[in-house]
Length: 259
Image (tube, rainbow, N blue to C red):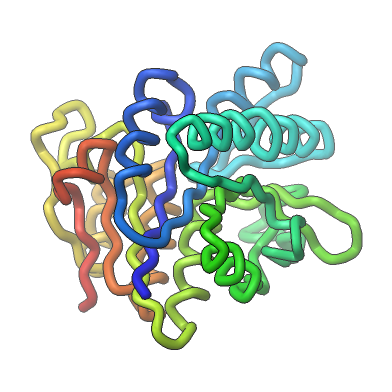
C-alpha cells in the first residue's frame, strides 16, 4: 500500500487562501495519506499578544512553560481543528491527533545540546504505527499536530518537520508499505537565492546539503527540514520532496537523493 505523508507549515497554514489551495490539492492525492502541520507563526503572534518572548535557535523554538501552553493551544487546538473541519467540508473523513492521543508519538525531553536548554522540547522515541494503520484502514485521514508526550503526563513541543519524518520512517519500516514524504511550504523548493523563486534546486544530495549549509544557501528553518528529510531517505522512505502547494499537483520541487 502507498502512503503519502504531507507536512505543511509556514505561511501556507497561516493564510486562508494558501491553506485552502493546499487542502484542495491534499484532498486530491490518490490513496492513503497523512497530514502533519505546524503553526509556528500563529504561535509567535499569540505569544506576542500575551507578552511572551519567542526565542529560536537554528529554526527551533525554545519552549519554556508559558510557551508550551501557547503552542499546545495553537497547534493541537486552533490549527488542528481548523484543518480537520476544512477537510470534512471536502468530504475527507479527517481525524485530528497530537502525539499524546492513542499514545501515537512518545518522546523524551531534550537534554542540554551544545549548551542550549531547549526547555519542553521532545525528541521522538517511538511511533505507534499500528494506530495509524488501523485508522487508515477504517478510511480515516490522520491530521497530526506536533505536540507529543513523555508517558509521564508531560506534553512536549516537537518540531513538525521531525514529526513528519518520524512518521514516514516508522511506516516505511512496516512490511508492504511504500511511503512518500512531501514538505510543503510557501516556496517552490529549496532556493539557491532565497529572494528568487526561479532558483529552485531541483535535486540535492546530503553532501550538497552540507556544502549549502556552510555557504549559507541553506539556513534557519530549512536546516531541520533537510536534516529530517535525509534521515527519512536513509531509513527507507521511497521519496522526499520539498515544494509548495503547486508541487502537490505538478510533482516539481527539490527532490532529496541518496548518495
